[in-house]
Amino acid sequence: MKQNTALIVGAHGVIGSNLASHLAALGNWDIVGLSRRGGSSQGSVRHIAVDLLDIRDARETLGGLHDVTHIFYAAYQDRPSWAELVEPNVAMLRNVVDTVEPIARNLRHISLMQGYKVYGAHLGPFKTPARETDANHMPPEFNADQQDLLEDRQMGKSWGWSALRPSVVIGQALGNPMNLAIAIAVYASMSKELGLPLRFPGKAGAYDKIIEMTDAGLLARATVWAATDERCANQAFNITNGDLFRWNEMWPKIASSFGIETAPPLPMSLDTIMADKQPLWDKMKARHGLADTPYADVSSWRFADFVFGWDYDFFADGTKARRFGFHDFVDTEEMFMRTFSELRQRRIIP
Image (cartoon, rainbow, N blue to C red; front, side):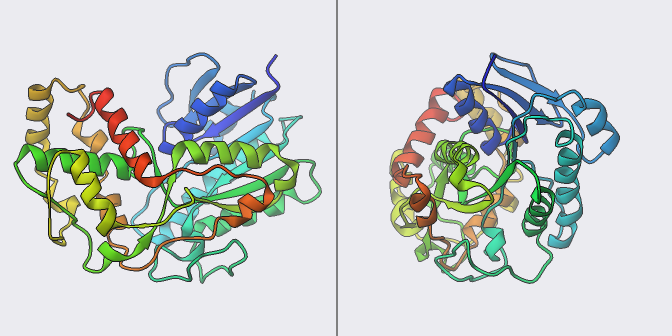
């Protein structure tokens, strides 16, 4: 018998898929992955399809998960406005907790994946470095509501919770609407295919602001650490690579890794200019012998526009995690180069 049973909610995203891989490599975890589309079970990872917005489906599908010891919540439902994000994202977490917590006799921890939205980073210039002790901003904000839910449910219980707050998470998962690495890789590959230099497409002013990233593997290690170290119970942690950069220095290095030059930045919406690139993508797949990856699975353009639109500093203080005992770090330039290399090895890009 494995020591622990993990329930990963949102198992196919950049965060959830890397967390599943990390837990599987540790060897002492049984892993149940939840998502709308399910998937084939492999090794210690069993996938279950469930609609978490449907409480009846949640109860019927998850009602037998008596052995869960740790819930890792990394699911997300997008909506057109900040206010509309609240109801579905809080409801999904509530339905998981309402269904699993009463029947999981040995439940020890619930891990909540958040982000810098807690600090209002998505709204405009915010206090930097952001710290876990910073006051909440005016709602609506589903991240804060989710944490309130866990804090209320934990009172008097033997299990604890943690809230992980990464920056932009960099990983390889396909078909994810928030995958910056894929967006950059495809944008750069298409620029090269068309004989164009790589122009930074973000807002004027975003090119020289300070920013940071979070490697998906680093985040997975931090998530398990926070869920299994008793010192971390009922705490929030910023999780970052540990270094800062500006796009004006990183962008030429990215271009060089694709064998192309840069040109002066030109503000443009990738969501708009890449909308007609399906035929180009199909030609690239045929010409370079790429994997048959649907264009929709590599089209995280809206998210890339969002990130490249930050014309203000975007970073948080990561020292609390180090004070509590997590000392891992990742070089962000190396992370980008490694991710692009892995995408080439998988034949996702030329």
